[in-house]
Image 1 (spheres, helix red, strand yellow):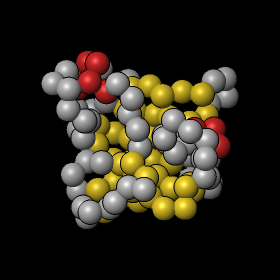
Image 2: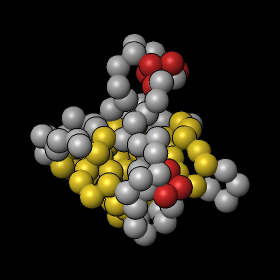
Image 3: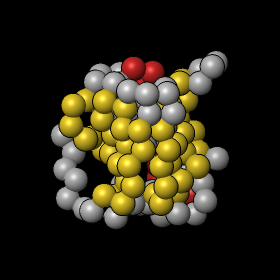
Image 4: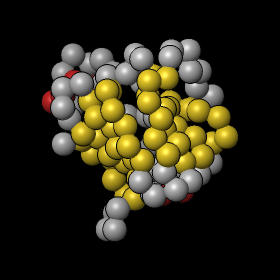
Length: 105
């Protein structure tokens, strides 16, 4: 279970899940896990906040130094979630009409 040791700066609510953004730029999620909307790599429901997993973020062009991405904004849809990174990249995970996705733009 993730600890929310930093101040929460934003909350976003989807149909059956919630996201929290903390002051250090971390994203946490909880609620219904179907369709990958929690970003944990599983489809299990979570009753308490857990950190969103960003896979191999160290290989992305927006995170070349190997550090964990820092986020400044979040949004939640019915079956998907979005996070805005401090460099302007948008990360998304969950369900879209065609496929499950975890991308950054």
